[in-house]
Length: 166
Image (cartoon, rainbow, N blue to C red; front, top):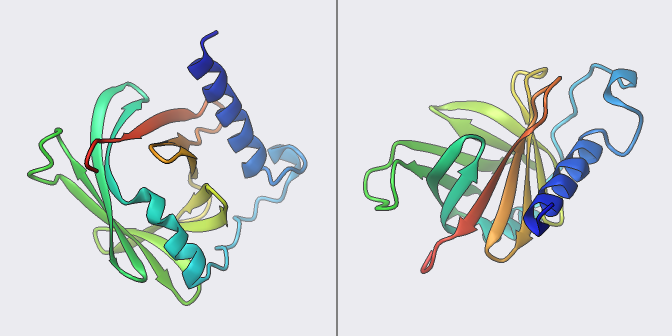
């Protein structure tokens, strides 16, 4: 197995354990959805590593393009693009710190809540509860991984790499 394959397997295993809270298997846990995490303004600013332009791959995609920027001290904007020209966006969402919680909004509605923000890991629970969640893990200054849950199947893993000048 390649070094990347080993790292990806380790990331997936870590996400599964993190999603379980390091506790019993999911079947033994309560069906209650995790509560949104308490997030300080300082912790939210710590997401600055996301700022910039990224190319992603995985999950059946050869390449996809995203850019992140802080709009203000409590809003991080995610913009998606169909190509590496970054000219005409085809999607936009925001992560908003409000009342000590972070919600990810798209098209004017909250679609997920941050339920864990620790170090270089962000865990999201989709809304309404019961839908699949996802986790973002910073691997280094120029790489992060997004892992999307798929109950009963292997998770989908995307790798994002910072573009030069981004």
